[in-house]
Length: 258
Image 1 (cartoon, rainbow, N blue to C red):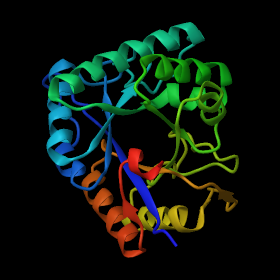
Image 2 (image 1 turned 45 degrees about the vertical axis):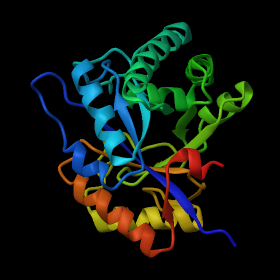
Image 3 (image 1 turned 135 degrees about the vertical axis):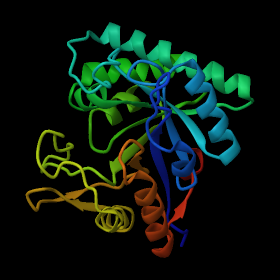
Image 4 (image 1 turned 90 degrees about the vertical axis):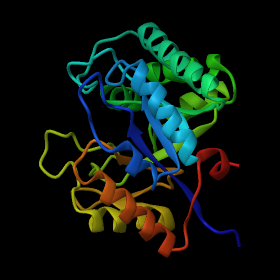
């Protein structure tokens, strides 16, 4: 029987100019894939280049973290964008990061929408189709990463794009499998031990308990650890340690999806 393997990802490169967010170098020591901000919700050319180099030096696979053009709102504000707009936003951002990867001698592994774009497209097939189309048209067998059990999966399948289902270590779930809105108490989990226990359950049993006690069934390919919380470094290390102690190997998506 083959050993269980899963990817661990984190949203990184979210500093901007003189403003710094998170400790990317330390978070990178625990994850196998990084979602690098592409300048629309965070990040800038210097940060993108620096983060790509950090990933390359740490042996961490690189993904484009695409967003609505919303620096002021950190990409977390819903926007009434057409599918054509979303396609263009994604293609533009993927292309920018892909060139930074090429210049550093590496390749882009995946694309993951950020914030409001992620949450809206998870429930809106037209938006999910637009994002999947941008991934397909970029070429290079790039993987689309999206919420498990959402509209991302059928959108990717329809276009022949490889899909990686994602679960969250530090976010609470609603009974329908969607993420609990950040405006609700308990939406973000700050206890590393609780997060680690939940992730082991996800990886080994294919379940997670929603906020109302409902048991949700899904089998994620990758687990997200947010890099913008004060406990990010400790939580990433605790989750990785718990997974490895449970016999789960940590590998980037290109290896776990084979």
